[in-house]
Image 1: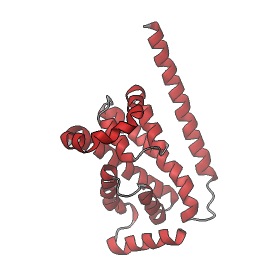
Image 2: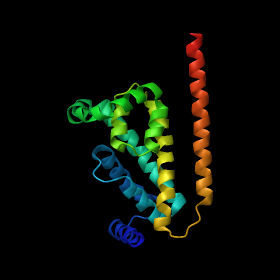
Image 3: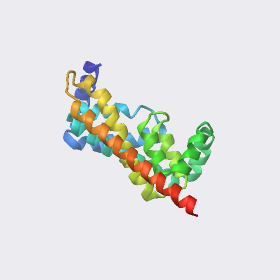
Image 4: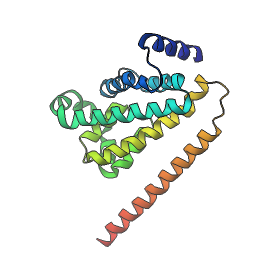
Length: 200
């Protein structure tokens, strides 16, 4: 697996002559294509970024690409290609109806959760968000946080494949603290909302 990733990275560098963060000039459009049609898993781009840039910078590049793609797909579905989206995808969302209700109820927290836990494709999450009651600003930051969580988690899983024997203790600890912080914020937020509903 490690040899396969290295071969892909070498081919990419030789073919595109892109290095450093300039790889985003190609991988962001690829992420948008993935976000629209799901032709290939986004994990492919994460592995490519990590192999080219190292763990920390590779995850950062993946976060930039994933967040950009998620926002672009949301805008395309919600503002420019609404009719096409309704014809092409609406019937496919029926099996995710319960998650659509959760998205309408929990808003940004549902986006963060769905981005973190791979229970549905990235493009479906963007499509569902575009037809939900989420405003652009709310979706933008939840998309960024959700992608950060998702890519961070995948980085923990995939880094040993690309760099065997690497020490991930700091990355694991920081991710655990990140999830704990999100959990505390969510609980406090929901408690505030519940109190307001009881007073009303």
